[in-house]
Every structure is written in C-alpha cells, then in structure tokens.
Length: 186
Image 1 (cartoon, one colour):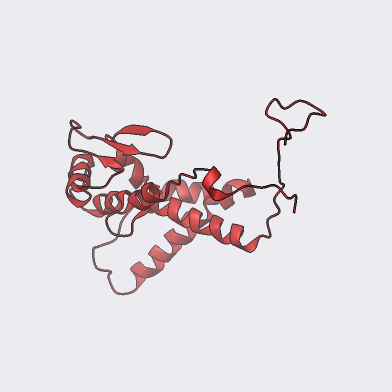
Image 2 (spheres, helix red, strand yellow; image 1 turned 30 degrees about the vertical axis):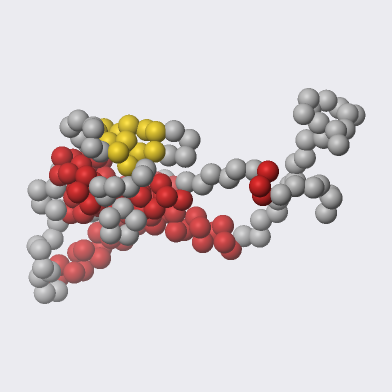
C-alpha cells in the first residue's frame, strides 16, 4: 500500500519454534516429563533430570551432557539459559489444601471466591465421587493440578481469545535512520 520496496531476503527472522517444541512436546517435552515425575510416587528432581538426558538426548536446544547435578541448558533464540532443576517437582505440584479452598470459598470478597472457584468445584467433584463406588488409587486429601497443566490450560484459553479477536495492526515506518523530523531517505 505504501509502495515500500522490500523482500523477505532483506530480513532474518529467527523463530523459537524448535525450543517451544522442546518445552511443550506431547510425550517427551520438558513439561510432559515434569508432569510425569510429579505423578510418580517416587518422582523427584533428580529423576526428572535423568529423564531429560535419556528421553531428549540429541536435541539442538538442550544441553545436558556436560552439566553437573541437576543442571541443564536450554538454548532460546536470544541466549542460552542454565537451569537448576532443584525444587522443580515441588513447585510444579503446587498442592492446595482443601481447608484453604473452603476458607477462601467462604470469603466475603467475591474476588477471592472467584480465584478459588475452580478448586472448589474440583473439591466438590471429588466429594461426589467418594460417595459412589471407591475410585482406583484411593483419593487424595489435596487438590492437584500441576503448574504446567495450569499453564497449558491458560495458554489454550489465551490462544482461543486471540483467534476469536479481529486484530488491527499499525504500520510503523522510519522515514530516516537518524529519526529526525522532516527528513526523508530514499
């Protein structure tokens, strides 16, 4: 529209696609492996790192070979970041005590009630399930949805909202490299 002459060859667009696939892969992604360790009775940070090394051995964006202990490196498009997995499983479990959920549900603040509504609904479903035939695996005194599961659910919701929107973009063109008023470069 503006008759600006350019081609894709003039720009180098580096994406983070391979790194995102590494992190969010369905079965052997980093988040899937973390969730798996959090479900396992003996799953811990050390077994998570072992799984990373065994399940994703040759990925160009993950370095585990020369790292000591529970450390690994992820090569993002901007830079390499060293992670220490100590505490990953504990933080990912993020259990909520039913007493806390009940207390928040009874709060006089509707905002606080809404924050814990999903947990309250989940707790009610668990209680309904306990009145029927016993469920396999016993039942838990904690309400569990991992942080990674919450992240994935929120990401799906965000993408649905973005796809439902009709975005408008503003084109910005610098008239000159010095960014000075009333000066145009060809």
